[in-house]
Amino acid sequence: MTVQSLITFLGAIATPHKNRNATRKNPRIFPKMAILALLLTPICSSQIATAAQGDTAFLFQPTGDRQVWALSDKAGEYLKVGQTQKAAENLARAQKAAKSMGNDSIKAWALSEIATQYAEAQQYSEALQVAQTIPNPLDKATALSDIISEYARAGQPQIAGEFLARALEVAQTIESDWHKAKIFSEIAIRYAGEQQFDRALQVAARINGGYLKAEALSEIAGEYASARQYEKALQVAQTIDGDRYKAQALSQIADQYTEAGQNKKAIEIIAQALQIAEGLEDSYSKVSLLQDIGEQYQAASQTQKAAEIIARSEAIEATLDRRYSKSQSSRQDSCKGEL
Image (tube, rainbow, N blue to C red; front, side, top):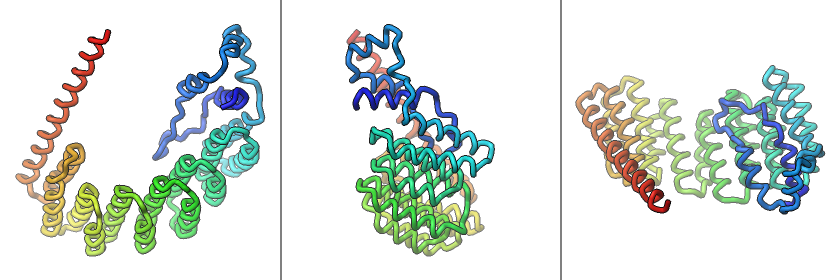
């Protein structure tokens, strides 16, 4: 990063963002002081000396780039008071200004913020258009994820088909296989949430990523069960390649059977989930699943079985806690020895 681009960036972050939504499902928190310390590293010693002598103007001089953040902040303030049109006007100006930003990484960051704010203003078409222009695959994927989350929060099924199809088009432009798989997984889950199961399965089939595909299929199975399509749910669950997510899917299906008053069928499915959970090598996942399964047995009036499984879960958890405490103690002893 050049000194000039660093100046630009520091000018942009001189004042904190006020438009962060604390309830956002996937909050993106920017530790600005840490970034400041990291980015100051390449500045030459003479410039640092100049700043130390009180001449800090070079760090915080007004720049064209700073306008992007000012407009973005103003849009956020308008969103807080429900003036979405005013917010959209400022975001349009911020988007235009962002196109001329010199540093590509900061430009991607700015566009990602603008795209997310468009989604918060329920301007989904504009949000996707901005996301499309983000060159960095990570920032593009993050923006898409936030846009999808904001759309889901708003709950607008009438535009589900068009929005998700557009989001899928943008996701296809991501070059990184992992980031593309991550967004495909989110889109597949969202299609299932809208009960567009055929599309959900079509998107899930395109996911090239073991646990991401398994996670999507697990959620799809759960949504099938919520829609009382139990056989479809079980069919999808059996296709999941990953014991943890297969057990989770079966657990969700069992929940729905219990809610429908079909305790006998619920117990049958819970037993399948339990068998898989017992074989998991990941102790943390095993603890979580056993806790859920114990609660499900309790809900199905299998009190003794529930108590046994919960006790087993607590015993494994206690072992993990002891191991963690021991490792922390050993680490502290090692540090003392070095001192």
